[in-house]
Amino acid sequence: MSDDVVVSLEDLHVHFENSRLFGLKGAETVRAVDGVSLDVHENEVVALVGESGCGKTTLGKAAIGLHRPTAGSVRYRGTDVWEAKDARGLLGGGDLDHDFEEIRRALQIVHQDPEASLDANSRIESILAEPLRRWEPEMSRTDRREHVYGFLEYVGLDPAADFADRYPHQLSGGQQQRVALVRALLMSPDLILADEAISALDVSLRINMMDLMLRLQEAVDTAYLYITHDISNARYVAKKSGGRIGIMYLGKLVEIGPVDRVIENPQHPYTKALLWATPDLASGERASDAHGIEDAPLRAIDVPDAANPPAGCPFHDRCPEAREACTDEMPPSTSVESAHRTRCFRADDDHPYWESAPLPDADEGSAAKRSAGD
Ligand SMILES: Nc1ncnc2c1ncn2[C@@H]1O[C@H](COP(=O)(O)OP(=O)(O)OP(=O)(O)O)[C@@H](O)[C@H]1O
Image 1 (cartoon, helix red, strand yellow):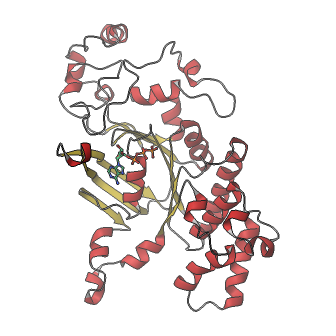
Image 2: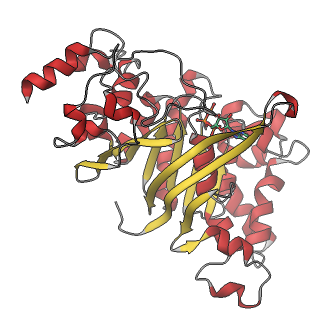
Image 3: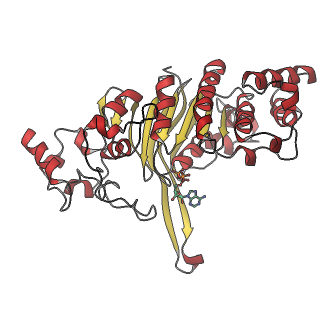
């Protein structure tokens, strides 16, 4: 992993004010992202996983400058993205190292639904030439076409001239997604937010698409923030690229680290629950077998309301290891081993957590086991 950080999130919060009952009962605040710090390095793949509504998309969009933080910061190579945006048009661009146009070009997105993201009324060649016209105005028409055709062939849309001449609806979902990927790559981005980029594709095409994304990543030197609700996919892309996996729960990044460490030595009880629930992508085995977990390691199945999360650690009401201490405050980010970090008191052997009482219906067996170990 390069030491150069492309995007840095520091104590990032993105909150939404939603009106309740059509405005009749005031507003509620959804803490979609609630205090996340994360650095994404050059050429790195960071796969973010979590249940629906945990804030993955909001975090990803904030990381590429599409959501303004409620608090905290998003920096591109050291420049505050929103300072750069607000400085647009100012004389000297606010004296920032990177202006907003440069940042916008450097941070790209590939959406879940490629058809919706491609202009239905334009041919593929025109869709792909447009960013080049904008960002490489010096490029001749012939060079632009050569560039576009080269990329189309590289992603398997061959003969390129044939695909270039089609409209998006004349392509399959997998072909559309490859066009969307090419469009992002033509900007020579530093980071691509791939938001559930394969989940709309047939299962049989998903591995091909993940492999293609990784091949392109190496070819054009970009980093990926890869968002998925499926830990098997996250593991696949992170493992193949030597990247990291981050686990989100109700707006918090509860665990992050190199893929093997997170998968083979999960620290957060929520990560263990996700692994338990997920059949292995390659072998079809449940990870639970590897961890020897017999029953679902959860006290409650339902995810709490994002507008009204439990106090303290938001996972405590589902966590089989929860104790009184977990109801008071959110655990800090604690290092388990070099780059592997978790936000759980259990990572700190000296934390008062170990002396506090297990919650009434928590898994007393595992709590007692730990006490005996002490
Ligand atoms: N523009 C918005 N206005 C109000 N609330 C929003 C907005 N966008 C997201 N939310 C809320 O913020 C929370 C996080 O949503 P987000 O889409 O980031 O989660 P996610 O993990 O990406 O979920 P999914 O996998 O279902 O897309 C959810 O409770 C969602 O309803």
